[in-house]
Figure 1 (cartoon, rainbow, N blue to C red):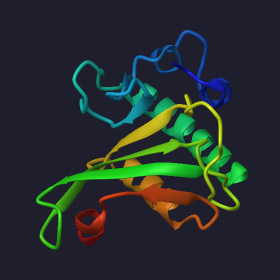
Figure 2: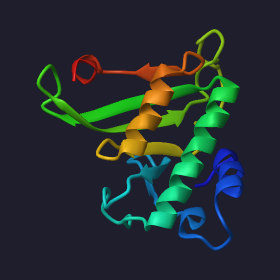
Figure 3: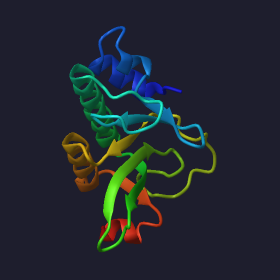
Length: 156
């Protein structure tokens, strides 16, 4: 479940034998896509809350993944979830995953190719570091964010 992007980033950010590197803070989507849970507390059932040292390791790993996305000019599938989204709503989480379905330069679909198995990021907006990472991703003009059904999300 861990693609080459995760392996490269984990090698840069994680010490041997760590729970972060072993995937303890990862969850799979309903389609089986792997996501690193980015929260400094319990956020997803079955994923433990990280210790302070593990949280530092998670944030370093996230920074490395986003740095690689930026260097590649990645196309990211992006989704936000919230409560009462819209003008009075509040976003509570965001998810980003690199897709190989679109050409990053032309945004034309590739005719063939397997779905990306790269690690995505599931971010808890209660955490300042996660919000800062979302801001970095959303403000980076070299990253294309593919978002659907986002009218209420953007208003929130």
